[in-house]
Amino acid sequence: MPDAEKYEVVVIGSGEAGKYLAWTMAKAGHRTAMIERKLIGGSCPNIACLPSKNIIHSAKVASFAHRGTEFGLQMDSLRIDMGGVQRRKRNMVQDLINIHLDRYKSSGTELIMGTARFIAPRTVEVSLKDGGKRWISGERVFLSLGTRAAIPDVPGLAASQPLTHVEALDLDRLPDHLIVIGGGFVGLELAQAMRRFAARVTIIEMEAQLAIREDPDVGAALLELFQSEGIDVLLKTTLQSVEGHSGQHVKVTVTDDSRVRTLEGSDLLVAVGRVPNTEGIGLEQAGIKLSPQGFVEVNERLETSAPNVWAVGDCAGSPFFTHVAFDDFRVVRDNLNGGSRTTGNRLIPFCVFTDPELARIGLNESEAKAKGIDYRMVKIPMSSVLRMRTLSELRGFIKLLIAAETDHILGLTVFGTDASELLAVVQIAMVGGLPYTTLRDAIFTHPTPAEGLTVLLANVPPKQARKAA
View 1: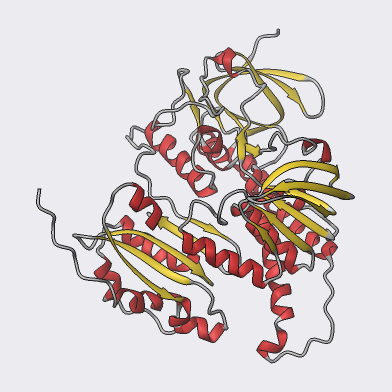
View 2: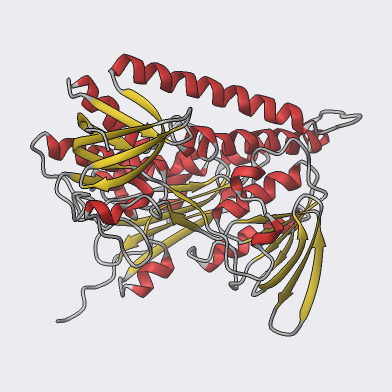
């Protein structure tokens, strides 16, 4: 092996946390190499967060068109052009890639396209995308390896070459009948979008409700939404086997509480979770330990078991959100500059971009009960928010949990149009440690979604008496 090229900083994987670490270190004058095997900027701008929301918005436009008469529009005909849908998305992606390339250039980061494999501590062999190899070592190494869609070990499933979100978001054609395995966030977003493009869609979920980690009222509201849009939802149903080839014809055998049955469709989408990209890259050669689930083991400062090696984002077991990966970057950056930040007790929001949206921050009722936390709950339908009446978007609800003995906000769940905007308002209050009464007494613009908080918080039950010790 030739002598390794020496860098002060080596980042493997150009996802959210990795790219910001590379740009920041390079701008600070450190010789920095970014090693990326395929996607410049990681999955978010290329195949996941932003492309999916682009496609979902096109589907929402299609939904509005179908509802045209409701808004006084006479629509003589409507035809979905999936090629046009994809062109809009691909133009956006290319623009984002160009922005990333400019950032690499302006920061002074060396972008190396290839696959890295550890051969010694903080030293990798890189198989270059265009052929050949390089050997690179770093004084500091940052792992931003990401995750990929899990494919369960079900007879015939892998052989059927099912779609994951990656392939589903790049289809230039519309599936005749899409069978979705999994009723989690990814499955829900893509199932609704494809249905709105006029595909027949069936969801198979092994649990008793959709979005199993959410409260039962959320699961019930999602089920009602999907059924109203013509999506078949099979709950408490387990996939047993698959025959055929996705994209042509698939035959899916499932079981529920009472029977075995077979479903037939044109395409199969698997959306049952994610696994880390930590296999086959020689982490053991670098003294980097993995968890039993295959994630890189890190402490609250995102330091691995190997000196001067950090892991960030999905591969470190952080919640699978781009905004969390960005905060991982901030934790590492600030600590390298003498700070003392950790990943402990982070208040992490999320939004599922179904239509309407599902957004949450903090505890829901199920989690509060499981932790033995007493709470007061207040809930209103979205129809009580006057802005929703102007939009003809009355589906959903807002629910807030408040501590039983204080006015501390424990958590918010919103299922409704512009849920993410309401989420941001409450998040700021929670981050600032403000009591719910601050929001209750605020003057919000009329008519806006935030005004709904005034209606919601006017009905909070009184504090509970403190229990005797």
